[in-house]
Image 1 (tube, protein in one colour):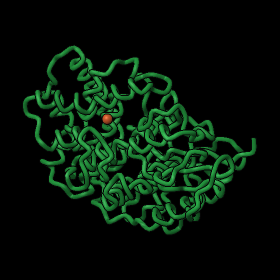
Image 2 (image 1 turned 180 degrees about the horizontal axis):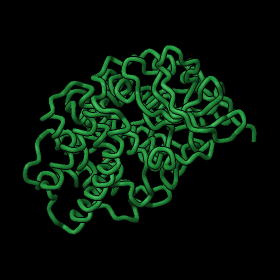
Image 3 (image 1 turned 120 degrees about the vertical axis):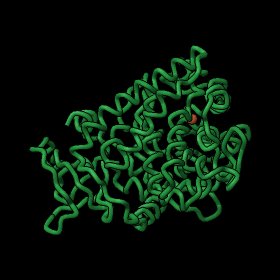
Image 4 (image 1 turned 30 degrees about the vertical axis):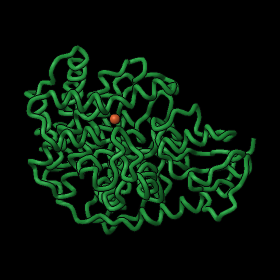
Length: 411
Ligand SMILES: [Fe+2]
């Protein structure tokens, strides 16, 4: 079958979807819909109703496999170019420079990341057994994570990208926690508030302890009943946190609102706009970003730059647009730990952001895309005036069969 060209795929408002059209992309995270595939023909009203109920506002259709729209609609190629232009327009605001060199912080961050994963794993096990969350462990952990990110965010943040299948739930919580701390720091929030945000982030999915493992780790699509059970984790998180002494309203907002959406299409309370607190809105952005970029048994992780583009695209409905722009400024257009292609044809891993030159980070060159071989690793600061090379785009580790574990964790 000849692949569909981006010019044959159009983005249309969901209310223009009709039976006879062919969906090319539901344009939402995999976990956000119960359909077996992202691509299928729309045959009946029931399918249409199901799609609208999910809060999907815009959809990509393939006009070679189904009906076209009568109104003007942008092609996937036009949407892609628009997102690229908007990304380029988002310029990093000068952020507080790292106070500790990356090499120094990296060792501490790796230890801390392992410790955080262990604590988060035990916490979920405890909750599953009906025990209380031990805040005596959580409090010093989040303080240490905040300290690390304040010293140098590029040490802890890329470690969050590494997740294993069975351990996804708690590793995702640790990753969201680190990203939320960095996001809150980027917004200039006070340290005492950042701490509460971090606690809420670490515990945001604690309700998943009440969802059976068979559903959490199911290596296939969920049935509708399983999907509903999965969604119930938010209400469960709220109940558990309400019964945990010392939990603040800020932490509760992060956990209880991380699946709410700005246009009122989220759950569990269909809160809209400013009804969702700043902390809940931040939680939603970071949760989606981390889920999109994570590898699961049934899906590849999306390269971070692409995931940021999706956030920007969805910010029209699901997130507050200015907050998404601030998030992108914080992680950088090429987030630390992501794979990029340089003009020279070399592939490199982003090591450290250049706070005032977001497209010129420090990178670790390790592969030649021209000759398809690893090259002698070399650290290069692309922001140096005498540097001849530059980033021309992001790449996917999987396409090059490069193992990010080897480079992010062990190097
Ligand atoms: Fe969640």
